[in-house]
Length: 74
Image: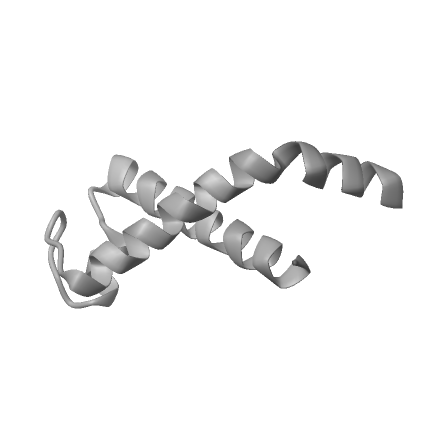
């Protein structure tokens, strides 16, 4: 479960950075990694975007549990 939480957090961070780059610099990092221009998509980029979205949903659903767990460890 700990690995899933870390993976989901990493994907949410990647998504947030990508949105920030898109908003500020008009740069789609995910598309660029796969050799495409801003706004272009492929099956691979769609998978990455879907994983980021699922990670965000996972973070929302497990937020209360994660906060409670982190408070208990301090």
